[in-house]
Image (cartoon, rainbow, N blue to C red; front, side, top):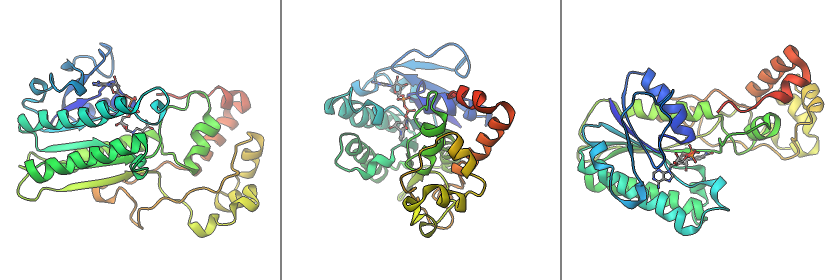
Length: 299
Ligand SMILES: NC(=O)c1ccc[n+]([C@@H]2O[C@H](COP(=O)([O-])OP(=O)(O)OC[C@H]3O[C@@H](n4cnc5c(N)ncnc54)[C@H](O)[C@@H]3O)[C@@H](O)[C@H]2O)c1
């Protein structure tokens, strides 16, 4: 398929471009900022445009089958960007991207929403709520099939591997590789170039980590977090103590049913606090605390 990727320079863009290339798709990239002429972008057509201004994308959309729409101000921008900034990029930008897709005859869309959608009337959540409504508007009126993906937090963790990456997987966090897996599965789910039809599909998918424990198993967590963690993840106590991982809060349990939140698009997330502990154990065995504390975010 030929896929137009807006916001291709984003964190998601950097990760999904090589995956989609490897899967054999043709890509057309767009962003406000120029992209480096190096991997993973080298050799791909690129259109620079300010998506919130409402022009510049129509040409890039011609001949494409799918729009993957990524740009947004989000959680980490809440302090530096105003309500108007959020509205212009997340709402106006989404509207104009969908209009460009429409005028180029694109009938398929993957839209990056967010778990912040649940914060309906927050500065960020509200724009994601309206963004999803724009997808639905275009589905109803212009035959657009779409998958809206709602990830939990996967922002880069810098050098805080233990808490910003590891412990975050017990709370509102998801591994970035899983987010990329959901996005790729959504693109593949939209499949061959079917016209939208009278009642095209509109799907919303939570891009969250898998559940590896039940509500019941973590109910009394805060009474004795180390003991509770040891029950759920046998052999964890030593590592948690040695690396002072902060587990005081009760972990969250994600919704999604027995089949998991990605079932509708055939994706099963694989990373969670248990896989982090396995990785940590390996690092610790290989290089001890020096190796663990030297770990930095690869994206
Ligand atoms: N990062 C997270 O933890 C997280 C969590 C949930 C949902 N999301 C959603 O995932 C999507 C991607 O997030 P990310 O963290 O990869 O993004 P990012 O912050 O890394 O990148 C945003 C991109 O948008 C581009 N951009 C900014 N203004 C633009 C404009 N006017 N015109 C065109 N492009 C413009 C930037 O150049 C950049 O490449 C967003 O829609 C976000 O809401 C992210």
